Length: 139
Image (tube, rainbow, N blue to C red; front, top):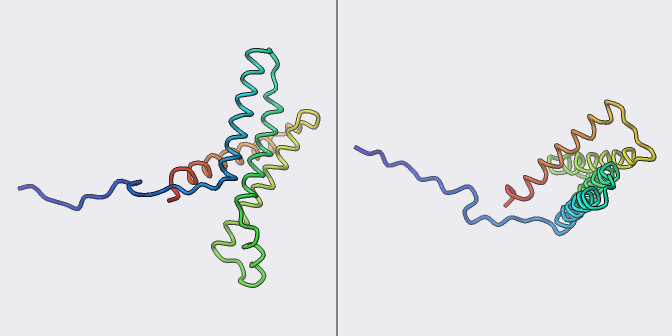
């Protein structure tokens, strides 16, 4: 005898992904910078990866700050710290850290301490998670 159970619908069946235009622009800029770095290294034999890395961090930070609804953060005084406000507050802090990491990883400044490298790695991992969530999970 066969048991008939409920069939679960596919994970993304009928869902539409909502990605903001600012987010798409930030991803496009990151892709273009990566392409420029590859072309520069292969065709012109100029290694500009350290410059590209600092611009990536700055673009990721600016993209995160743009994604935050800053008007909702103004409501913290009235509403207090809610779940929604807290996520926006954390996102803007991570965005600011990414911009600072981009500035300090610019080659003329070039801060290369172990703690700074760890911060850049954590920001990169968070950015990857945000990209995955916004691109494939949010519906």
